[in-house]
Length: 520
Image (cartoon, rainbow, N blue to C red; front, side):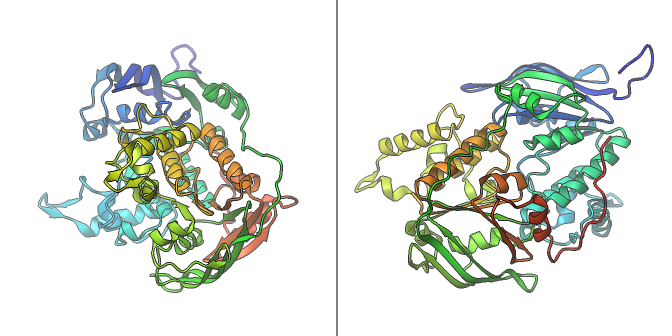
């Protein structure tokens, strides 16, 4: 609060006033006002497609508003690009990772801002040392010389955060920074945020994890359909208030339904092993089974081997050993296409890299794994293809002006729904879902989870990989926990405490004895 001539505790560093953004066929922002306060976490929340990322792209110079202005130091500015914004102290961590896989960690962190020796050549040793210091700050020992393409998604997310921290920005925009991080890594990030606040940095924080927002936020702004529906200090704000302003209702729905009977065993894996490039095994003698109509939750920390196991099942790693069976017969097709034809589908963890072709349309992406169904003697039956796609667009409530628009024009959550629709179009018997709710808002989560339960009730077997405790407890009929490539526990949600799941996931990891620090 500001009293008299007293200097405000959280001065406004940047203001967006009356911002509108119009794209062909849609109005992404409509007369939006937004303030970024220094020394505070400014939470921005809303459903997918509400305009959050568009607003932040305007603030960071990626996009220019159709109407409205940005004000810094009481003067209007118009950022021509991200470098222009950076000169005014604005940095951004994008929801979709913007890294070069064939370059090292240090090279990615300092790309276009290289440390020079005498203004002539790149000072590689100085860059490596600075990168090592940033990783220490993030409490990780990722080598500055490691190729980014060889890192896990979570480690790549940490490199993206380090890249933003290296700019010493006055305003730091974090768009879904924890979407690929484990619980322990989230705690580290929160400690970094607390340090940035003490230095007076204004942080804009976007996340779909609502409890996370309540915990760290100082101010909250809610967007719905491109308009501000609520803006206030965080004191007194709870999850129902946020949800009510987001979607007009006050409850989270993870679509719990009546239990149904399971069928016979649909899938079985026996002693699956996958050698790790770093030595040892990424997947180490993993065996599990799932019945028709059952949702099997697989929980674990980053690097536990969950994603690698799913990749073994879909046929990505031909050098993996062990036996797989689907619907009573060996699953031994040597390639991914063959396993899709047998009835296995995978929703990958990284939708941008493994799930979508960004330059293709929504329609083309969604039918990419199932073109056989629409193939005719003289080509594709485009009418049938479009009708099938529109049916999935309606079922999954994908917000798109046209299925002919490029998939890159969609918000992150709607892109994820396209990936899910693409998998379901193959009519799988076994559906592998690797972090399917990553980057999806609360309304979209409920829709996806209702779809999962409907598919299970219809007899589909589902293996559901997640790092979200609430999700795995709410959705799973049975839970398997992995750590260091091995299964370390098996539970049923009824009568199991979350602490038991966490303890099993920490087997083989050094315990973190530090207390979680409150961000005040």
